[in-house]
Amino acid sequence: MRSHHVDSGAGIDGLTLREHADPTPGPGQALVAVRAASLSYRDLMILRGDYVLPVRPDVVPLADGAGEVVAVGPGVDAVRVGDRVAATVFPSWRDGPFGLGHLPQLGGSLDGMLTELAVLDATALVPVPAHLSYEEAATLPVAAVTAWNALTGDGEGLRPGQTLLTLGSGGVSLFALQLGKALGARVIATTSGPEKAKLLTGLGADEVIDYRAVPDWASAVREATEGEGVDRVVDVAGHLDASLRSVRVAGHVACVGFVSDTAPPLDPSVLFGSGATVRALAVGSRAQFTALNAFLTRHHIRPVLDRAFPFEQAADAFRHYASGAAFGKVVVRVGA
Image (cartoon, rainbow, N blue to C red; front, side, top):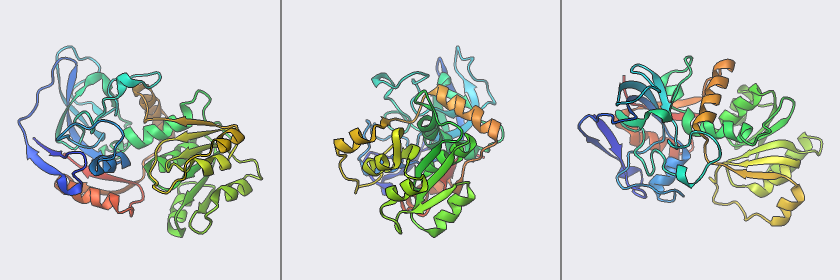
C-alpha cells in the first residue's frame, strides 16, 4: 500500500509518497480501502504550520475520505466487509457536546485518509448515502458536517421561512446554501465576483451580494431584509463584526472558521448590541454525521465537485485548492 505523508509546516512541496506493508485491523477496528479523499482549509493550515490543534510528525494528511471496508478486527459488528463508509473527523466524538477528550483528529494527531488503506475505529465509521459516489461521499466529513452543525446543532435549528446568510463560496458555505434551501430557508450569499454569483444563484441562492463591488455587505444584507437582519449567519471568514451587523436581534452566528487575515478584532459593544448568539463549532459528532446523511438521502442532495486528481498528483490537488480557483470540493481519487 501507499500513503502520502507530511510534517506540519513543510508546505505542499513537503508531501512525500511512500510504500508500506498492508496493515491489519486490531480489535474494534476496520480496514478501509480508501476510494477518494478531499481537501479542506484545515489541510492547508497544517501544511503551513498554523493549524490550531496538535499535528503528529510525518502524518498521513486529510480528514475527508470514503471507501470500502475490506477487513474487520475481532469484536467488530458495527460494519461489515463490503460496506461503503466515511470516517468521522474526531473518531471518539460519538454524540453530545465536544470536549478535550475528543481532540484526536484524522489528518492531524491521527493518520488521515490520503492513503490506499486506512485502519480506523469501526464505531467511528458511518455508511455513506447510496446515491453518492465515493468522490462525492469523500467531501462530507469536514465541510458538510460543519455546515449541518452550523444550521442545526444549537438545539433550535434553522426553520422554514427563516433567512440564512452564507459567506463566500468555500466548501462549508456551499453545503450551507444547499442544506439551507432544503430546510426551507431563504438564502442570501456573499461572493467575490459575477461569475461566482451566477454559480451560487444556480445552486439556489435567493440573493447574492458581491462583496468586492459592495464592501459594506452587512448594510446590503440589512437592506435585503427590510432592516431586520437575517436569522442565522454561517461565518467562515472571521468577520464577526460584519456578521453581527447582518443578523437580527437575538439571531444566531455560527463561527466555523477563520480564513481571513484581515478581519478586525471584535468590539464587545457590537456583540452586546446585537443581542445575538455567537457559537464557535468544530465539525460535528458521529450522530450529527449520521443525521446529515439521512437528510442528504431524503432530499437527494449532491455535493458540488470542482475537480478530481489522481492519487499520484495529490500535490497538484493542493496547489489547485490553494490557488482559490476552485468552486466546489477538490478531490483526490485513491482507489479503483
